Every structure is written in C-alpha cells, then in structure tokens.
Amino acid sequence: MVKYGLDYTRCRWILPLLLGIGVIFGIIALAGNGWLESQTLPYVQQASLWQNCRRPSPGGEWSCQSLMGYAWGRAAAATYLVGFLLLVICFALAIIAFAIDTLRFNFIRGIGGLLFVAAVFSIMGLVIYPVKFSSEIEMTGINMFSWAYGFAWTTAIMEICLGFFFCCLPNYEDQILGNVKPTYFYSSP
Picture (cartoon, rainbow, N blue to C red):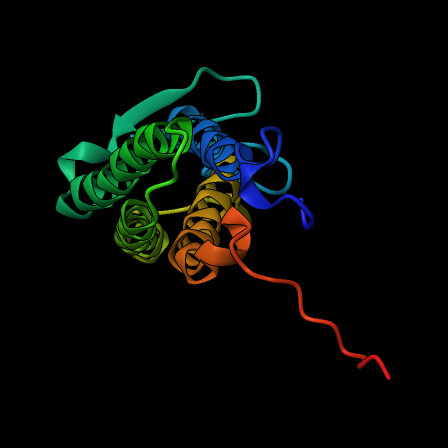
C-alpha cells in the first residue's frame, strides 16, 4: 500500500471496508439487548436502546417497558439513529467515490466532514442514555453497561478516526496518484 497508494486495487477499498465494519457494529448496537445488564446474581435487569426489562426473581419471566415513553429515551434513540443513518450514507458515498477510476478528493473530504457530524450525533445519544437511565430508572443490584453499548461506542470511535482519514487523504493526492518525483537524501559526487 505504501508503494502503490490507493491506486493499488486491493488497497483502495480499505476505507470503505472499515466503514462497512462500522455499519455492522452500528446494526449490532441498535439491535442488541445488552446496553445495560445486571452484573451479579440475581440477573434481574436487562436494557437496550429501546426498552428496559426486569424479572422479579431469577426464574421469573421478563417484563419489559419501552424507553420511548421517556423524552430522554426518544432523544437518545433519535440522535444515535441519525448518527447511524449518516454513517450508512457515508458508506454508500465512499463506495461510489472509490469505484470511480479517478478519485474525487474533494468528494472524499466531504465524506470525512459528514463522518464527524455522524460522530457528534452518535456521541450525543451515547451520553444521554446512561446519564438519564441511571438517574430516572430504578436499578436493582449492581449493573453494568454491556456489550451492545460497547459496540455503539466502537462505532462512534470508528466514525471519528475514519473522519480524520477521509479529511486528510486529499492532502496526499499527488503521492497517492504517483505524481511526485522521489526524493533522495544523498547527493552524487
């Protein structure tokens, strides 16, 4: 990749591939039922972005309550969902940008800017959720934010990192396209 840059056919798809992995992580976070779970016995509480489930005893049946009845629940879901939709749009735009034989570097910088906006929305939802959940919903025992919440944070971190990559990539346009003459650090006698 260093020698051939993004013009090398196998390496030019790395950034869209990473965006695709971020989309998969976002789907797992949205569908996962492990945003908050009981950490110790008895396991009596489990929550997702959409609902909070409890059971009265370890062998009992789960009873779920929608978090969409709370204004903060709707706000957390909406902001994280907007961030996810922007990530999906960036994924589609990246596939289009890298499928063209001649890379459009200004187009790529726009994708990077849109990724930063997606990260802001995702992080807003990820901050609203635990702050309001822990203050407004009664929790039993010791609870932890679990695997699906971790996938959501991983998606947000990937949005930030890929935003930097997409924004900085046009700065090296000549090197990537091979238009720069190599520089040697020794002089011939």
